[in-house]
Length: 313
Image (tube, rainbow, N blue to C red; front, side):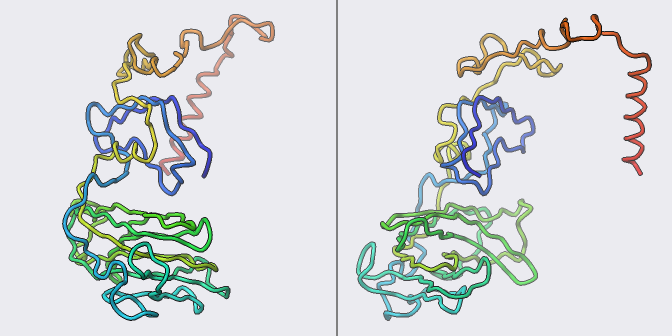
């Protein structure tokens, strides 16, 4: 989904648990929201987005730059790999690196592959599960062509018991660049949480298509998150929007006209002339004033009652 613009809307979150935005699986740089009035009765604005305010503690990835161990194999201290096709190659190489002299090459030659196949490699190891903990994964990546898709993921899985994944799809180009994923492990109060969640991993997944991706300087640390509204705005969304009471004339009685001091008017909103909406005199009309056909209201009520009865069956 590309090219959508969500502008000059009034969004009111009445339920304390409701999210104002829930955009999933869409490129944020190709779909924009701005110049809106947003209100949650003074509560934090929920957007479903997470960002790291800061990171702390040591890097949890051992051999983050693949500088230790032999050339030509999986990096020392990295957990595992799964090849998405017979022609997939994952190995430590020299001569191409963001820092130091080594990196990890993930390469797919031309050849048959199942639809949706991925080659996955897990830097580091399994980590103890801390419900609700927030982490920041950062990876330096480059490719041999522009627009190479790569997934950065954190997951916990146990056969027949649970499966949970946090994922960020990034598009990698010819130059080294740092990419990241901020994620929160499900809390005990979350519907996603399972008592069997005792360990978790991070992994890098590359769709099987001809080409090469190099991985270097993987970094994983505990993080302190921002609030969801700040995380949303860091994506470039709603930079010129206002968090404020829209000041309806009487929302409780269904009057959503704006008071003269409404912040929406300063953003260019034009009041809808509700008092002018409705039937009007016209030469195209068969009658004026409008004469209602006898029995019209009764027939409508009977059809509505019949529809309700069908819905109960």
